[in-house]
Image (tube, rainbow, N blue to C red; front, side):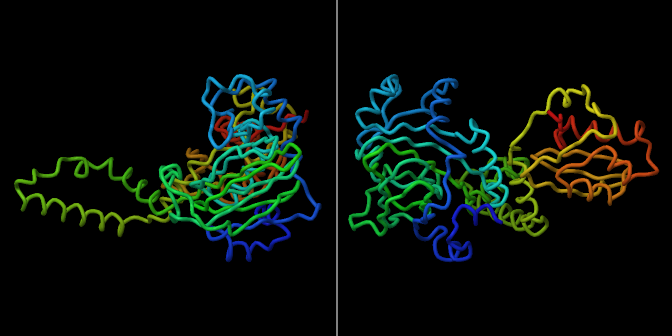
Length: 385
């Protein structure tokens, strides 16, 4: 099942993408059939506050429509008693279960995600009416919360086009709903909204989807041209109008030629793939070269999960390039069927590779290849603990 489908069920994914994604907010009731306490809870909140030294603004308070300054962020419990909302950013970087959840979803959607936790205590608003510059899913974890969503007054705002500089709509909310544990609310970017807790304390997670836009594509292209001398040179002084206009025409011509002579779609896709961060990066002591084959040919390896991995032939046809997480790793002297088979599995053992390569020597050929893939963080050793 698709991770997006699982998140929004019982709503059908096709219906959501056609009617709601980037267009209209929707509240999705789970009818008590699921919850999100496996991702977050009061216990995990207390764990973060007690054992992680999270600093402002990653942990902060919002009260009566505004975010409190750092100096007021010292006594959380006192402010919570008054009705302030406690916010912890980037819990996808702090809680393993949330990290795996966001990695799965990012892999499927192709865009970065981030999860923040919001803990509220009374009917007082933490934030005033505002909009976000990215699409969000609200996951209700504990308690109930009242939400109001209004139409957008500025279509598809970019990250720097904040709601603080604009005026909220005057008409009534087009969606008013109460979220119960396990319910989900989707709000498109640019749609104004606010929320208030109902009676008992509430926890919800805000899952942000940071989609790419045409402006992002243009910014990437600008980065490509920064490496070309003719695009960095001064334009002629405008007192020489003829030379100035000729230079502009030449740059436009060069831009057209660049676009016609490059596979922009593939290059931009590769660039986006390179921005992805693996859910797991460290596999010590093995990545440092120690005790990699601790079970000999029975040592089990796993392929890094939830990353787009591209494989292409080396120019001299003596091996393959593996592009993953923005880095390129080459392995030589191996057949194509091995590479394709290797990365189509979640796990494999040294013995599996020997069976795939019966004419290759374990110590001379196979062990060095696997050692390189481990040290480059392409594959990981399973400790068995």
